[in-house]
Amino acid sequence: MGSLEPVGNGARLMNRTRLPQANASLYAPNTERSWWWLSITCPSCSSIHLGRVREADQAPGPRRAPCGKRITVRVRRTYGAQP
Ligand SMILES: [Zn+2]
Image (cartoon, rainbow, N blue to C red; front, side):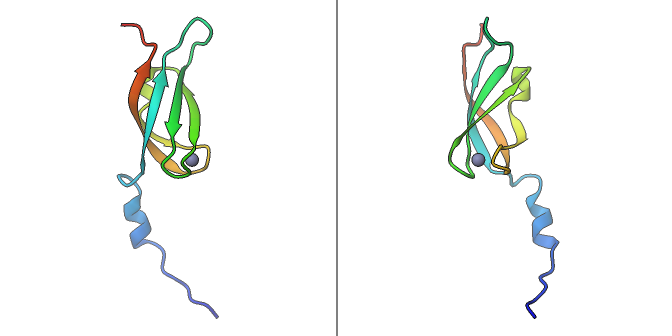
């Protein structure tokens, strides 16, 4: 009963480049915290996810959102960075 659908072709191609882009804001460390904080607008669930990284250049790129989706983070704005 039912049908077995072949898995493979379609799914494979999705992997690398097709991650949804998530716009994020990056907040620089200050005297109270030593991490960079990220606020990510999730393209998957439309809520805001928070993340943190040690270095600003770790912020952009692929990441697993707390809702379980894989996304690619794009930093649109950076706040509080020292010139
Ligand atoms: Zn999400």
